Image (cartoon, rainbow over all chains, first blue to last red; front, side, top):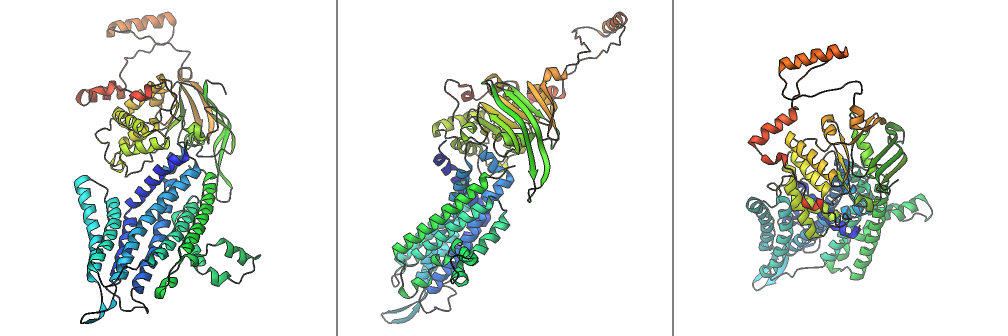
Length: 320
Length: 305
């Protein structure tokens, strides 16, 4: 049996099941809404126009993405092991490694789809934030209310589309809203090109967001591996501990000798500072594509290690 | 293992352990079983007797503590062997948001069945389990019996050589139960080997050629149903069209001739047969005319792997 042929259906079903969950839709909805509302309640620039919106958007991507990634892994792996759905699949000619890999692909697919909506909302929010304009007789800060309205309108429209499609064609509400949310935010971001002529869209945040997405891929794989043995609560606790240690790794273990316990921890923990580049793009800074490629390669290697660990853990457990 | 044997279990033992690896329960102990090609084999026993544990070890879901399992000539963890097996779990374990049509398509894709063939089999199986009308409703909205029908259909999507059914009639109404029993007999007639577990002894008696009885993980009895149930020290005659007076006279004569007590009774329908007679009159005429999905009868090509 060709495992590659089985990957897609299992991953697709995992993706569909995950976005059916009200919590997935709520996470995406709240995250995008918070990001779009930043220009409305912006009382400080942080020394740079649009920075508050950009940093908030990236923070939301990391935080909500983490909850989504870990929650999806917990539900689709630990939940299915407990309910017996995993046993029903493993009872077919599906290898346990294929199952773990497909679960990660499906779970990360949900996070990636949410990330597209979040990045689009971030770009809208950054562009719509108050910018200093000196044009004709007007000199002062201008907030692009049209941009905010387009983003929020897209958000509400996705709810309406979900409800209508469910009423008219019995389409699944969660799936329709999740997909429409992403499409509507992309469309709103494109429309701001027409409505806002005084501030150009700043794409410097995109590589920073892609780095956060790479970190989320790592967490998604870690959570998938852990969920083969632990329940959702324990997986959450473990992943957040890794997040905190990973972000503070430099400060805690930076001076550790190579052959010591602290040195070992420093080597094993993913250095999440490499994926959090908010400061690098402040005040006109840019993230090089080479750096992005290297960080992505590091993230994928870490994912492969975690998934191998997950496959090994899953292969050695009873499914009863 | 001969070519006539589809399942061979030798000295199988399963001990469940706690977090600290301390043994908590011996679920199966020194089990020896053989299931032959084309037979319907019943695994019986009370709750906690080790039936489901045995089935899960057969499917490679649980690892035996010791002992040996040979399934269609290979180990249970061999995915190539699993492609030749159909499995219906005790609870159907379906994705609640998928429709029966999507569920069957999903399981067909796990067997690598090409899309066009998967669609053909799906439609035939939906017709067979009488779910055509509900084929596009999410399974989560189904009753237990309807979900069971979907579970049964998914177990057949790969046209299995060996079918493992854990409590196949659980949750089904008498008509559904009768249909599943008919289906099992028809599949066996078509050459499919079947291993089934059940708490319902009457159902097992109707469908199984041989049974094994487990209790607390230990095999208590095994053999052909007819041999196990036969009472060699008694004989029963059945005479049609005899009135009450003639029957009483005949009984008296037999008693005086043999010097033994003769028991006289009148055969009655089972409640199941009576129920089916009544319901099929008012509801569906096809209860007695259950038919296999046509693809299950196609044997010119090897079973799909």
